[in-house]
Structures are given as structure tokens and as C-alpha cells.
Image 1 (cartoon, one colour):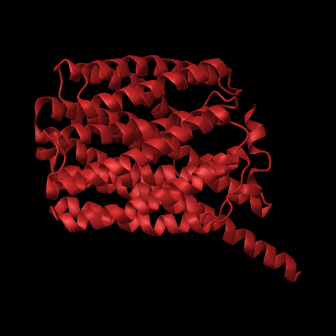
Image 2 (spheres, helix red, strand yellow; image 1 turned 90 degrees about the vertical axis):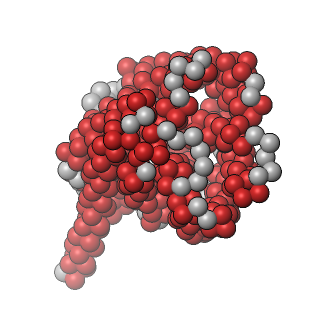
Length: 431
């Protein structure tokens, strides 16, 4: 399938812009919140091993506020565009938002102030929002007849989502009641399902659509794509089981299968770029490629954790910030202007180019500051030095503010274009 096939008739399947963009802009806001919470808890983050407090709030500001928020906005819009299957209605998107966004705010507050009932209330609301999201996406997937590889990734992601929600709520209840036999093991299982199951499978699945589309290349090789899928599913299942049962053989098997699956996936991605007609993909793909490098690095660090060479905290930091956040920042700086441009085309007049929508120097600031934050944060964890984490958080905040500035500039350009188009149309009518 050529990317042009995906985009044919895509404008007819666009949601009201306020739906995806509210998720994206709030994700940008939580990006700042994440680094701010890391800043105020730098010493705790450097040696974090669990427990409530600002460090746990920072972790969930990233996983729920940035990752899940981005996934929801992207899934609602990009799945309908890519598959050609429209949502039955848009009200579930609104309903998911009104449960999830306040729920995350309340949950983060509960974690930060060590208040059990606030945590439970926030988690309950956030879970309802995510369940509504899952049901809405599942309905689209059930009606989809194409893009079987990406759809299969999405089904596994939804299954992982249900599992991580159950484990997550159990962990919150366990903070107060202590009914779990092994809180740490369940916590690691929750982490694996969240980062590698839900977000990881969505990232790999969406990449099989977005990378060829942005690079203007054919679809990924079918056999290699499916072999990669099988290996990463085996890796996810083995790793989750191994973490829950503290079974080292299962964890080693999961890491091995993960390296094979990731290797095949990255080969498909690089082949798409090589065959693509668009070679200059800008700063966004500098970050995407950096994330591709980080993914196998993260798995190798996981192997080092198994042999007690490094701490599990470093593994978590590199997985969350080094890999997933880097990937999402790279993809978001493509998706936000891309969707804005598609909505502008509805007006009939020529929209500004992607480079004209906002000052791309802001993206360079984000790139540099994010890289510094990853390096300093990782160094702080290795050395157990909160000062390095503190400095990395300052750099992260600067980069996050620059990225939000860029996203807001795109939105401002979008609104200016519509206002000017409406004014021109009114003047033409008067004449």
C-alpha cells in the first residue's frame, strides 16, 4: 500500500479538531509537569524504588499525562484516517476526556501528598476514561478490513491496557491495605504492560503506518513485519509473566525475543526510509531515529539489570525518557502540524507549509534540551546524585516549554488561517 492510498478521502474522516488537539496540548502541558515534579524530587528520583510521593507523581505525569494522553488523541484521529472506518459518534471521545483528564490531575495530587483516597478517586476516574477509549478504539478495529499488521498491534495494546489498569488499581489499594504478596513484582509487571505493552505496541503498530506515510515509501515488508509482531508479543507475554512470578528464565526469554522482534521492526523502518521518496524529514526524525537506537539499548540495559550490573531505576528512566518520550516528541512534531494542515485544506484556500506554521528553531531547542536531560538524568541515577537529576530536569523543562510554544504557534497559525479565510469568504459574498 502506498501512503497516498491512506490519505485518499481522509479529510472526510477528520474529527472536529478540538478532539485530538485537546489531548495533544494537554500532553505538552504534562510534559512540563513531569519535569517540574522531577525537579522538586531530584534526590528521590535518583534512587527511586517505589512508594508514593512526588517521584511517583512524576512517573505517572509522564505515563498517563503525556503517553496515554497522546495515545488517546492519536488513536481517535489517526485510526479513522488510516483505516477508512469512521467513529460511530464523537461523544465517547468527549466523555473519555472528561473522565481521564480530571482523573489524572486528582491521581497525581494523591500521589504527591500521600493521600490514599485521593489516589483511589483519581485512579477510578482515569480508568473509566481509558475503558471508554478502549471500547471506542475496539469498535473501529472490529470494523477494519485493512492494515491487519497495525490492527493486530493495536489489539495487543488494548489487551495490555486492560491488564495494566487492573494491576495499577490493585497497587493503589495495596498502599493502604497491603493485601498483595509481592508489591514490587506486581509493580514491575504493571510497568512492563504500560510501557512495552500498551504504549510500545501502539508505537510499533502506528510506525508501520506513519513512517511510510511521512517518508512517502511503500508499506513495510509483510513477512518481516509479522515475524517482528510475533516476537514482540512473545517477549511481552514472557516478560510480564516473568516479572509477576519472579521467573528469571521467562525474563531472559522475553529479553531475547524482544531483541529479535525489535531488530526486525527497526530493519523494516530503515528500509521504509531508504525506499522513501522524501529524504529530508527534519528534526522530528532525528528524534525518532534516536528513539530507535534507544529501544534495543533499553533491552540490553534490562539484561544488565538481570545480572545486577545496573539499577532497575536506570532501566525505567531510559525506557520512559530515553526511548518512549523521545519517540513521542519526534512523532508529535509531525502529527500536530500535519493534522492542522489537513483541517486547513477544508477551507479550499492554500494552507501554509509545515515549516511556515511555527518557528522550527523551537524544535532544535527541544532536541538539545531533551538530549541533555536524558544524559544528566541517567548520570544522576548511575551516580545516585540528585544534583545531576536536578540539572537534567531544568534542561527538560526548557525543552518542554519550547515544545509547547511550538505546538501553540501551530494552533495560532491554524486559527489565523481560518479567521482570514472566513473574512475573505464574507467579503466575496458581499461583493
